[in-house]
Image (cartoon, rainbow, N blue to C red; front, side):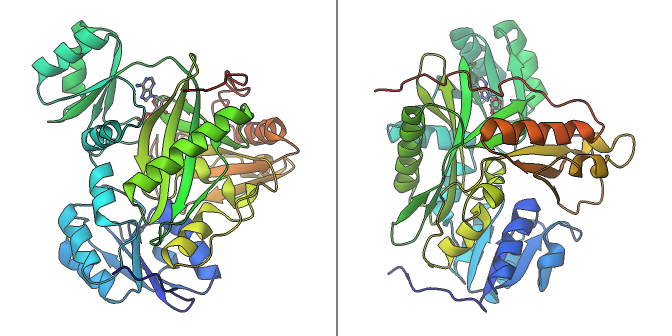
Length: 398
Ligand code: AMP
């Protein structure tokens, strides 16, 4: 029997993973009066300063996860790459929300794609491959492709783009994984994401969609509202909600969606946790994704997700630190802009160090302010392509 009773402020929430997502969720939880415990391999992890109890251990340490869960009323996670034995050890001692099975399904890209496909959700052409030969063969069939490692790849890592089967062998070795998904290269007009909160009693709340722009496979900026046609948004929300319901998740499910030039919506991938493309909810919506996660896993009423202020965010990667500290003062002189830093000590290129958020009268105003502030940081200028949706008038009908 599932327990739907509320876990009230004063209780302790445990986090498997103490990166920026854990840190921002912990801020929200702290302000609601919860205590925080964190397990992370890095003693300097971003969520560490928020925690009363920090367990430094690798994710493969199931005993450490049990130790974490023992002192917690509920345990959640901010990273899906956690071994099954660790998830099970935590779940044996405290409710683990999002749930062991859904994380297990999501954490292997191949397993996730097969699950989506077998549940009738729209995905692009793909094939799971376990050898160079299979990989070359898949690319020969699909043409230009992206080879993605089934495990561990994120933010464009663990991936190779190949234009034909001649490049496929090199791509297979560049990725260097035993199991990959080969995906046909899609004709994407716009990228959206949907965030669904689902409680253990099956009730759901869906955030307004975000529209996202990636550079080299990494999120550069995101904006809410999207500026897309209302019919596209409605269909994307329905798709995201259906995926969340089928998955049985208890927590947040982010559903990344491609809108193709021919008008189709395809699911790219899932994440069972807060998502970079919903950082804007801290300012855009009456309830942030972080507070919604806390409410969801504690069986409290969902917060209102109505948009109060159109908001954009721009990610700040470690590259901005190459020639010293970025020009924060300049960036903060732009009206409506705030700085969010994650407290990471070393700024490696490609590492997410923080983001800027900016509110405006509408999505375009918010985005211009945010990217102006980004440019003021003094690094390479923001990529301003796709500020207008490409497919604003696309109508999606099955
Ligand atoms: P992912 O790591 O799967 O989230 O991919 C990161 C980004 O790469 C996406 O947001 C897209 O911009 C791009 N991408 C991923 N898969 C494909 C695909 N099959 N075709 C074209 N672009 C893709």
